[in-house]
Amino acid sequence: MFHLMFTVPSLVVIGRVLWPLHLPLLAKIAVAILLLVASQFHLWSRLSSGSVFAPEFPRSVVILFNWAFGTILLLAALQVLLDAGTLVAMLVRRGGVAVPDAARYAIVGLAAVLGAVGVQQALRPPPEKRLEIAIPGLPPAFDGYTLLQLTDLHISRLFPADWTRSIVDRSNALGADLIVVTGDFIDGSLSARRADVEPLRDLSAPDGVLFVPGNHEYFFEYEAWIRHFGGMNMRGLANEHTVLQREGGRLVVAGVTDLSAYRTGDQEPDLAAALDGAPAGVPVVLLDHQPGNARNAAAQGVALQLSGHTHGGMILGLDRVVARANGGFVSGLYAVGGMTLYVNNGTALWPGFALRLGRPSELTLITLRRPG
Image (cartoon, rainbow, N blue to C red; front, side):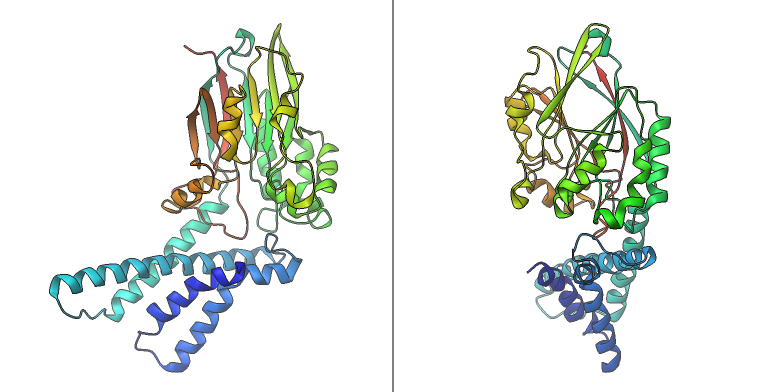
């Protein structure tokens, strides 16, 4: 079903864009075959690595597949709009309307350009983003405290060791008091990605590096990856918390596992367990890869939840669909029952759909402030 779902846009393109064009039959057949091959990017990924989430082709091939796959999706959407416009014109004229080849060639060109721009935006270094968030009850000593949030790194053939090194160097240069990673570190097995993740060992902040798993960790040797990250100067918070202290003030940072844990029989997210024993009256910052349970976190007294997972919806318009699948949360700041939720667009994104249009990646420095 997964692969069939991604065949549908290519069939739309073949039937509604390619076939009506005045081209030789053999040319149409050849192009149709290429479209079907490109639409099965995720099938070829599974054959290359055993998983649709980790294409193990050369990076240039992964980039080309993403451009072709993205162009097909965008072209199918543009063709639907063209058909809708044609239908309106038919109703207005009360007669048939011929769509010239030039119109179809135009949307092909537009889709190809948008696909290229989308891939370029996905691959570029994430822009630095700074924001301030007011935390009720924040001790004076923590006013101005900075957290750097990294999320959805998706270290892979598309985002390899040199990309990871650049992120680590830029992160350390920001001088945050604490670095937090809210899941989806990798796409691939430990043996395949060991060298690519190695630069993460050098992430450094005065109060350390804390992390929680994302859903993609559960697709690839979860326990091995968590042990590996734990040996890289990073501390995992699997339904746990830690208490930060500064000049007599305290701040709780808690973390939960991911909702995907049930698929592998691992420890499922348990916020009550994560907060068990936390000092009363101390503000809580929660790390939760997925934003969908934010209302539950607010009900349990969390002051700030940091999440990722959505990649910001990747494309304007598509973000509305992504929001519906994540409790209505997709990108940016939300007020949720007295709690602040921040949904990060992601430092990178899944190499199986590496397009961004209007939803940029980000390297996110958060400054905590006392209200008022």
